[in-house]
Image (cartoon, rainbow, N blue to C red; front, side):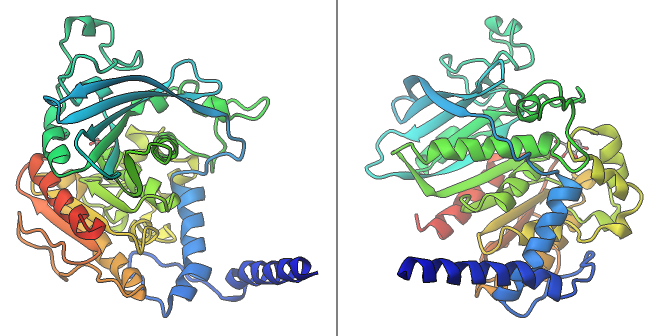
Length: 404
Ligand code: GCU
């Protein structure tokens, strides 16, 4: 009897929650600061509407049908002169010819589970390190030539493993091409076909593109990290540079297990406000990278005014979890000021939760990070890249919010 009453009560609450969004009229949010009166109003009304917009109109939704995913530890090695333990795990997705390879570096001397940075890499796991034992994905460019070592370790500057391990953090990464190749293949390779219904040959107009797929890969890696006893899975920061920064933001918006999100030079379709049409625009990105977003996003090419909410909405979806947006002075293509404004306009949502938003109303000077609140920002001197300067700031921010 008690159970029946409890069930009825829960059902009543759920029906009220469902009824709510339709009873309050929601107007277009556009590219303004997102100001609401309470956490309840945000969570019950605006967040679902904004989430739905990004899911159906921008990145595309993940289809309901989910293929089986299993994990297999391939090898464990000592790394960085004994300072780290490196684990490599195959994530096998039913229907895919090759696994998604997870590369994990853990501080060797940790006595308790450690927090971690998790991100997708551009060129293959073997590129983030010179360690010879790191498996070369068959999907990586130059995989065949790699027998000649040529392409090993070319992205080490983007993944300062020593610095991260010394800070007491783990690093986990997967290669974008293992999840979904980064070219317009009509979604015939990568994970999309594993999700097709019978007879389906391409995602529907509101279904995911490559960014959605890479974000899915991050969540499935998080599933694995939750089973890894050396990792404190409650403190995993999802990080990404450029297109993979767009991916990190969308991954964190969808999956609340990510305790922090870091967007490095993510630009158009990432942190930057689209309405400014500064640098890359929606039309340009849809034309050059037709496979990144869902087909519905084409509606906004040269039509940014029609966007129900701009990219500040994406950042707000991560609240109250800390978020760091970073730009580079020479990266005009990614519109540094547009990235800054998004962080600023998302801040009122953080404040609803009693958190400090971005502690600046105007673009800060180069190399003057603002990370006293839960929304952080810096613009680094230099070009489009992720450097040790950027990582130093992210580690400081993580240490502050993760308490170590
Ligand atoms: C291109 C693209 C950007 C993207 C970048 C990258 O410049 O236009 O949107 O962020 O590549 O991923 O490096």
